[in-house]
Length: 285
Ligand code: SAM
View 1 (cartoon, helix red, strand yellow):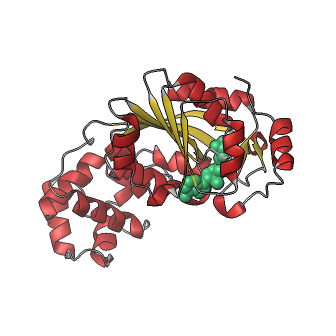
View 2: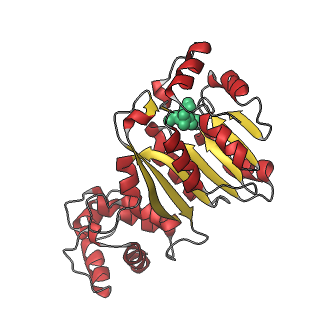
View 3: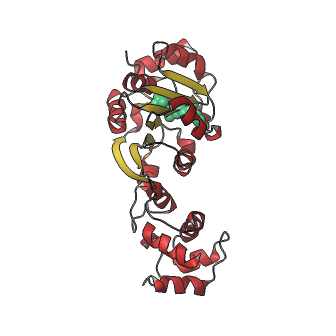
């Protein structure tokens, strides 16, 4: 099975089909073979696996995934790419392309219907305009997915796996850490794509936890507390949460709860880890 991953073959396909690249869909096609190898290595796919690819584009990565796995279901929003994909994937009989917006796709039913008993992984070079909503819906959906290996903006990847006290630490780090264990597999410069994105990229792998990292009485309430704590980053947690519209805790209640956890009333949200947010939320709820 031959590879399409090069500037030359990407340019040829674009020309052959008179394809116009859609910025609004975050189309930056991967043209570097070493980077493709890194994503594939990080994903650790084998013939037992079913793979969901979000945004197959011209089918570059899809071909590799098809060669390694049992079945690939690729979800692509851009109608223009569907005839191109039937051509570039014509020799891959274990690929199903679905023309849909992943944000409007019922992934739970798709997994049941398309993969049956197969273990499932997600692998994608994600469109950057919608990275966080896609990742959060994959995690919050609690689907039967083992891992999510994705190319995303470097800055977002750093926020996803940041630790308390660091400048990148925030609501996204806590949300991702609750559902998954994240590690960065590669840094990828803009010249590995056509057209070049304005930002640097990273391949990040999220190993989805079987159970969330902490147990908390009211998950929604904890995430509201976290959003409140980081809503005004420079304020103390007490002030930020008390001012947050989504919650109605009084300052004294929050101070009292912090005291029970032996935490200072002047502490900032960025100093608390997931266990501490869970404990604080349980006291306040
Ligand atoms: N996988 C290809 C590659 O690596 O060269 C293309 C990656 S490109 C960064 C992102 C792809 O996601 C594009 O093909 C784009 O059309 C598609 N896409 C954008 N928004 C989408 C959505 N909401 N649902 C499904 N696919 C989407």
